[in-house]
Image 1 (cartoon, helix red, strand yellow):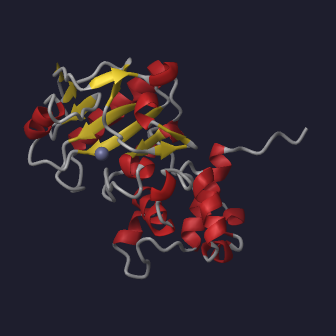
Image 2 (tube, rainbow, N blue to C red):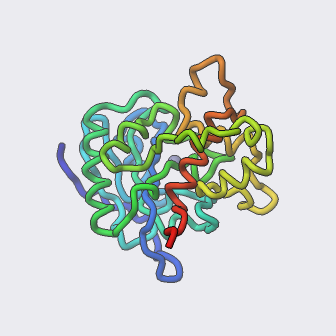
Length: 247
Ligand SMILES: [Zn+2]
């Protein structure tokens, strides 16, 4: 693994003094890392990211972390839009959500740890592009190893408790309850004005991150919440909003 500088002109200042508090992971969906680097540094393309990781795990820095890279587009997380102003964007060279190489996973883990340490970013604030733009984006896709990375403190993947599973089927059938839980997990349920994502788009984005078997288990349906979906959402809510101490 080596690190290179490939400066991109595609950046501006973070708005209102915002600081990085999120890491947003992407796949490039291009034929090669070189093609992606060419595009992300082309002034006419008006897109960029702070980093790109190629298939061999080499890391390329395109935009200084102090600056606002242009990777997330119209997006929302935790009730706030302009994700670009408050995030670091990492592109991973990958065609369309194919399995990621071991070298990429290793480099991504090292890079995330380094960024988290320097900016005080919490594990639950490492998310995917599809999490912040569920109606438009699918990356980093359902093959991204969220569960595995969470074991190294990168992202979170809580284990639902018995209480999380209690009566979960009823909530899975309630659009209001699902939206409340998705919102507590960070998703922009009411964001984007009239282009608000549908419940199906939100659940699909959630499944790409936390319930990837929904894309290969024929007993589950993509975009349709089950009791497993609700149990995981409740576990996430507990993790993100711990109840106050008893005394
Ligand atoms: Zn993306």
